[in-house]
Image (tube, rainbow, N blue to C red; front, side, top):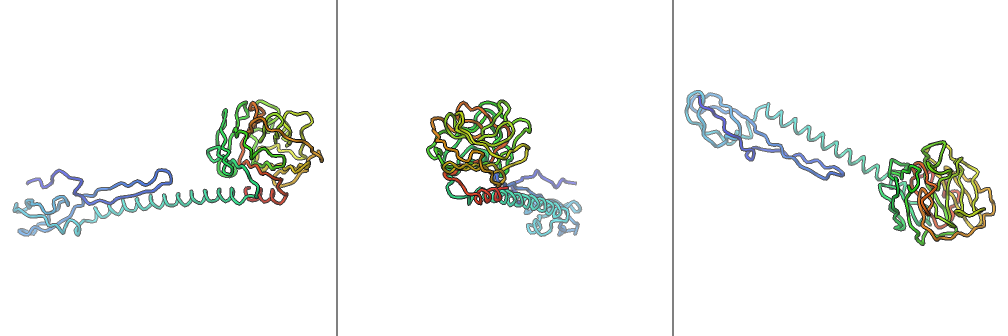
Length: 328
């Protein structure tokens, strides 16, 4: 008996192309080649002859009568047996599942991104800087982009990603000394999450949330988790909150200053400063930073920080409450 198979040429086989689109990997397509087999009857003896589509239009010898037979062209598509069809169908089902999975991931990723963006948009007027920590230290409002220093990095945050600080000296986000931040009346707001209930900093008894160096303003926590607003490193230049953050949960912390009036907020609840007449004037000769003082990068915060915003006015209690409610 003569052999009726010949070396395969993949380019002659029919193919199906599977294309999968990913949000990061882009779109890639993989052609899957098929070599379908089929049967036809010998015109001389009626014997069923089985071969593959690569023989279509070529001449072979019937294994029964040995007569030369031309393999019909139409059989290459119309007479594929169940086994080849099952293989093709199985591959198509697999491809469909992969495509649907990719679409599902794309929908989920898009929804998550839209959800984050909705929490970062439509904030009260007067916002001059917003550092969201979405894998970078960019300011989405005023272009006052920061720079990570020391061991600062990113982790999952309250809204998307957040800045992560280990509380060691030199770890912070330096944002320079832009004119937009040189304010006498303002609001500082941020989501914070302490890493340790015993210490607010790994190296210091206090930790700055956002602040300048010498003579500038600084919002920070003392060793008991109480929030303070200070004219940095000036005796008598600070005023204290009536509330403390002592656990390791996420909390929204804010402070507003309008003239001599200072109000602290924790999770949308107002706590007027103990000093009812906070009469100071800030100077701005140093840089500012997130998670440490802007000068020498000391008093470093230990934990996570997200959605750090600076407003050029004192937000009202309902506005602070609305920001907290929107982002919680």
